[in-house]
Image (cartoon, rainbow over all chains, first blue to last red; front, side, top):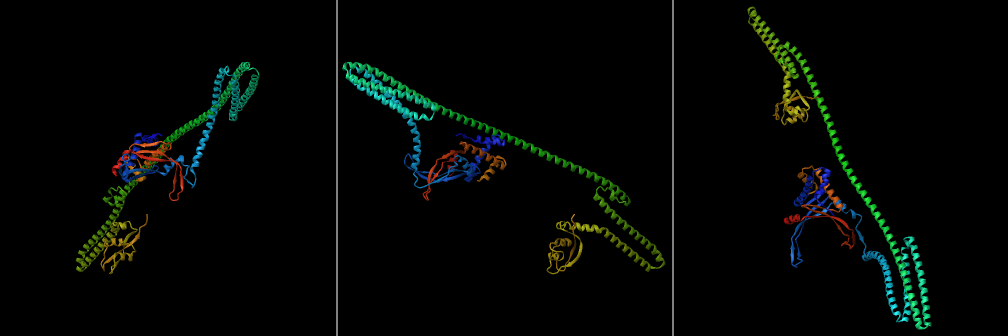
Length: 546
Length: 93
């Protein structure tokens, strides 16, 4: 149960997003401060992956002061409740995920379940108790034997005083000893049964011990018989003499018994020690096995840890390499793009230069031509034709100049005619008279009028194009016509406005729907017409798509 | 305030893009998750502490039909705000 603080959380940010420690700490702090302000302002904040924070108001309630017993009012307050996201909840509850709520049937007695648990526990304790009991039994036996030694000593002291009492006591002691021996054999048999499962060597040892015990038993039995015989003998022989003999014999027997008992005790102890040794061996083996398994587990765990650490290192390396690769790839991409861009730019520049050179060449060529042409016309307009447009203008001007030349020629003829007239007038006036002169004047007038007409025509023909261009430009001032699908070529016919007709109806009747703008443009932008007014209807031509 | 608003305000405050902030917030939450998985508690100064607590198994009775149910033990993530926040909330109401 360690406490993790903000710095521990921000450590991951530092690792993964390459932030400063300070920045990462700041970020996490900001995150929770915003959470807090959001809670205060809006009472609820949901964060994906973590959960929902809510402010819940608790109403005031009555209660009793525990110490004084007085009724008190606990104030209402707001508290923050947190419900984790389902994702987070499941993750936290992972260790217990396999459990599910189970419906319990009616009538199931839970005391049975409790008893079962208790029994299991008891069985375990019983086994321990049995072992303890065995040990206790052995201890008891040893104690009894130790107690036996004391009465025997007492008996030795008393032997001089009461012989018969001793005689009576002796068999009792012996019987006790035999009983104890039986008991011992029982104990050993019990003990043999339990360790018999473990190892055959134990069993062999146990058997050997048993045999030894049996021999001792038989010895004690024979001794008891002897003692009985002795008793009988003592009864037969004089009491005084008998008193001494059995004393010595009893005394002799007693130590024997004691020796035997001691031997039995030794054997017992040996068996005990053997058993304990074997038990110790088994426990040692178990412990060894346990320690070995523990060691193996630890080794595995260590290996696991090492592998995990190696994995993380590899991951980190991979991440770094990935980042490097990313950087390198992005750098290359940028370089390639730059190369392409540079190449394109250079190509453009070269093309532009070529264009300029061509233009200059063309200009130079045209300049030469233009100079030649302008030299013939004496027009000063062609002095500096620097651009193509100017050249075209120059052409136009040359055309105009030609027209002018034509007009000039006509005027010349006029003047010639006039001269003729003037020459003829005096001759006529001299020769014929006023009428002829009047005719001559009429001729002259007609000739002049003709000349004027010619002049006008020529000027019209010369300027017709320019006029139409001007009209075009005036029309094309209107956006609708400039961008429209038709071009106004001229005026096809005129229409008189009847009553009830509007611009819309006229245009619709003559040109079709949506063509009002053309009529507007032809009629100087008029939109309202009176009855009887004449309306120009334009001649239209579809603009060819370039 | 839902997740989107939270992220947008956080992005505005910290100066990162929204997607970056979302990633970083997810990262922080992931770190918290790891801590909870290890059984650690997470303490945030001036806000509170998150802790994993064990709820023991218990028998509940459905009041409708008297059915008894054995609810298994489970681990629950709990949040305990600091006393300072508790006080501010108390002062408001």
